[in-house]
Image 1 (tube, rainbow, N blue to C red):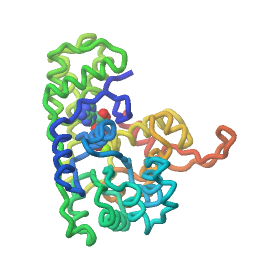
Image 2: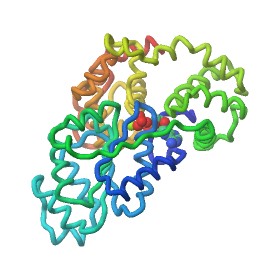
Image 3: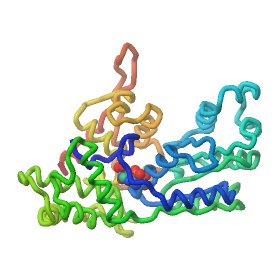
Image 4: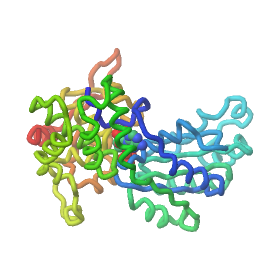
Length: 363
Ligand SMILES: Nc1ncnc2c1ncn2[C@@H]1O[C@H](COP(=O)(O)OP(=O)(O)O)[C@@H](O)[C@H]1O
Ligand SMILES: [Mg+2]
């Protein structure tokens, strides 16, 4: 098993973001109830959200994270599931329009933090509805996480325009942090760090990652695949450079220049444009002709709801995602009918012929 698989599942080792976490606590302490964090793909946004969920900021009683776009109904369900039973029971069942008042009654002085990952995918009505909750309930804090541009989207949105949104940032990770990630990940897959690397080899890899955790994983994977092929046992500085050098043409394709972004075309290497979890799904489906949502979810360690949402995206059913990623030849995944699984008829999904062809071309 590779130490460089891309995953943000719960047991993945991480280095905690102390500075950023402190800034978040300060913002909450200063009653900044709307907060915004944007960074490109792979900078560690989702991982930071997981860190916050695992250790709720000082003073915050409940933290609830949403992985991907959720309609208000689902948001209400997830929130109420988290509230203690004895408090809910006297307040009755809320509707979408009474939810703000309901929450304020249940929470009283207790603070709730809602985190919306991939917030660039949220519909305007959801923002409008969240604004109303924000109005009703002054112990609800919201952190919107997403790609660059989210900021404009939120400030352009009529109902949030007049609200002050506190900006948070993710700092670049230090070389030592990246080294720490590699060492921890080797241990995580049962190895004895730094083996198969030398300490200097790891350092060289971390320098090449340019402070971006996802780049670290990409390059690390490239290196161990290269060394496995060449039967290299000990990976030092030279081997790292050789492996990354040999792979230059391909890694350069990943860098998207602004011009390319404007005149893009579906690309052979579209894999690089998928999110890490989408990549896991695609790799899984490369090996299987078809699978149900629950089978895919199990394989990638994600719950059914977020798996469903990822499959929708891969099928090209999320217009924003399609617009944002013109390099991806949608649909990547198609429905391949229904099959009986565990006694129930379930939809099964597989790669589109085109996606499979493009992926096998690049290897
Ligand atoms: N602080 C961190 N410590 C360890 N690994 C990290 C950290 N931040 C990100 N990663 C790893 O880098 C990859 C990309 O991170 P992710 O949080 O998914 O980025 P984003 O959500 O910004 O696209 C993931 O596989 C994750 O495990
Ligand atoms: Mg993410």
